[in-house]
Structure formats: structure tokens, C-alpha cells
Image (tube, rainbow, N blue to C red; front, side, top):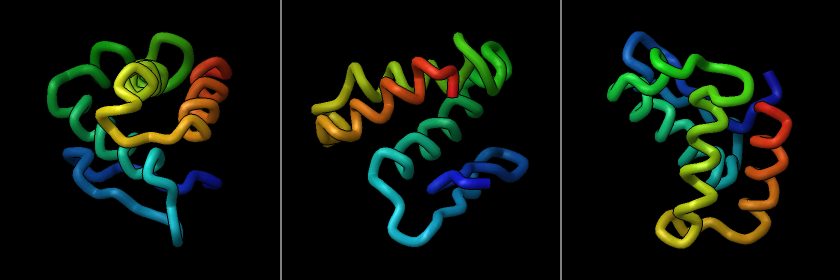
Length: 85
């Protein structure tokens, strides 16, 4: 796996991080855990367009200021979202 971070475990409460992950990667995995808890992952699935992956990226893009994300982070999030990742 080439990801900076990954969430897993029975309740999506374990986040594995590579050395020096980006803030956006850590936040995304934390938010996936939140999605799992409130049923978004079950409702939307985990991959492809319209999935929990693209849903969380849309949220992060919309709330860039609140999350303290840089313009560079948002550019990367948009690229990943548009690729369905």
C-alpha cells in the first residue's frame, strides 16, 4: 500500500501512519472513522465515485479553512476525488 495513512480495525479506530504524513492524510483517515460510526461507509461503499472516499474529500475541500488545509492540500484532494480515489 502506498498511502500515507490508513484507517482500519473492527470499528475503524486504528490509524496507521507512514513517517511524516501530511495533515490532510491524517484528517482524511480520522474522518473515515467518523463516517464508519455514523453509517456513511455502509451507505456509500468504500471505493469509486460517490463512495465514502469521494464524500470525505468533498467535505474536506468545502471545509478547507476550518480544517486548516493549504491550497496545495486542496489541489491534491481534488485530483484524488476526480480520479475516484
